[in-house]
Image (cartoon, rainbow, N blue to C red; front, side, top):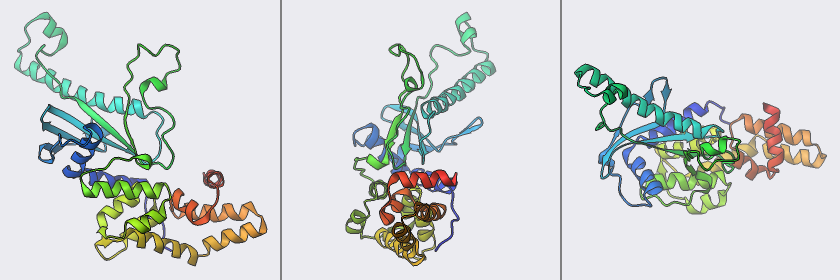
Length: 309
């Protein structure tokens, strides 16, 4: 059995590298913001430094296109983050602050502020900022359950007059968009099936080979370290996902994981089941795959995860 050598940091790197491709990025934006219309052209996108002050975004592009200039950002979430609306608001405001700092510095250098309003503002009335739009992509197996906007983070009765600052959220486990970029469509479709434990669908539907790098992105989005390492160690550059998943099942059987669980059932010992589940979790196998190969309840799996922590 392949040993655990991965981390969420590696998963983030794989996913970020995928979305730094202008074609993947444009297809995502066009589908999620513009109902599939080809508004954003790959040639109009420029990858920019995602680090602003002490904060680093996942992916940030400058789009000079049909509607003017925009900053477009992607934030990947492998698990739910409760203050995410605040984080996005903070990130976007940092983009604006950075622009404001540049404008103010230029005016100080030029010494071209004349009126009292301009001196007070530090900029001219004609100055404009580049807007920022951020999309949050969530790869959890469960629906996003808590905060979708800043309003959700307040405990007050009158929210009518509060600015909402709602997130642009994509939940891959339930995403039904069809993406014109073939690699992006494959990545989201197969990841969705893995997250929902639709392994028979993967075996029947995805028998064609896909580029190894794309397969690594799928394993990263599914947070499956076992599958990631399985693909990583493949010498060939074309991967058949159904074969990789089947190999994982065979390796799990060979180590007696499933057999061990059955022994626990025969003995009626929950401790035996928890021990097997704990071993699977420590090896980095995803929740959905554990549920599929063992047949245990999600409640028992959650209990095993709590025991680890």
